[in-house]
Length: 358
Ligand code: CP3
Image (cartoon, rainbow, N blue to C red; front, side, top):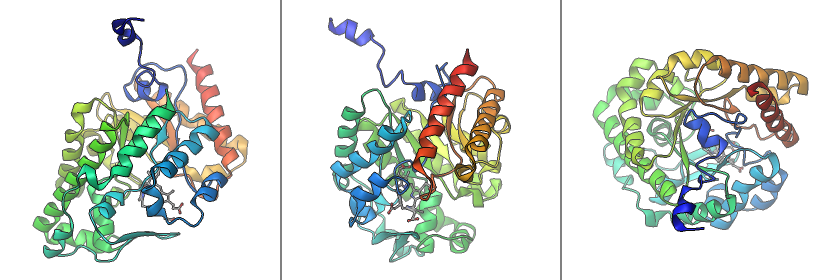
């Protein structure tokens, strides 16, 4: 085959069902992947992670590759997501951060004053060589299956940095946001810069989509999100726009924010289980694809109920009109779920969506 002919062949990843759906193109079946598809629900994950702390495991490219591939092999999902964490770039620039099992990220010296901001220098590619190495190896191994890169959005990462760990009320975070707007915007700008670099590193190594997790933005009123958070998130989406990789924007409890989260520059908005996809479609900008949104708790319900509810998600996506749909849960896979339930769910969604497309 001549070089020109090779170039004319459709690129297998670019033409994958997942990326086609992200671009609102027609698909043979609805693509499926799960947030937190790699993790404690899989016995093979628990085996390879034994004795290795979470953040340490994110810095071992061979291990990252293996863990990222595990759910693809087992469940036949339509995309892989890089095994990493939203606090990896913070660790990489020298912050004292740890992920405590059953708790989440814990920050030894929280950021609460102007002086504390000095802890946040810019991220350089050399700080995270293991990320580009893992992505390069994965892209090679995954063949036609796309790899999703990701990062935490400035608000969600700031909440860990300011509170010092997970929070239910975000009191200190909001106190800074409302009470010290200048310090707040400097913090978010620095985080936007770090996040944008972290995403660019993944894209340049071969990730073919990215997801920005603003998991905890749902705690904000739309006015406050627009005024105090959206500009920093917008900076991130703008800074990866030139790569032509779909940008997914996700938050939990974000029903009232779906509009601005789409406007921030997302090609795909991830929806949690609280808002049906046809309603979500009315809230996001035109041409925005949707991802979601089965309640993860349904994974513990009898199979016929689970599959019926999955069909409900597919029907709502159909009612959402002429836009792409990526099937996912409304949030991450619970660690205690039976992985066979997930494997059967992927097969069910593939089968049902194929039938309804003909
Ligand atoms: O498969 C995937 O989805 C990719 C891997 C991934 C992890 N963390 C691995 C992980 C992704 C996308 C994340 C992002 C992340 N990390 C978010 C945003 C997504 C979300 O859940 O809303 C947040 C808020 C974090 C912070 C974080 N890291 C928490 C709250 C926890 C849970 C702590 C616990 O033990 O319950 C982590 C740890 C973590 N990140 C685990 C995994 C697989 C579990 C650690 C383990 O297996 O020992």
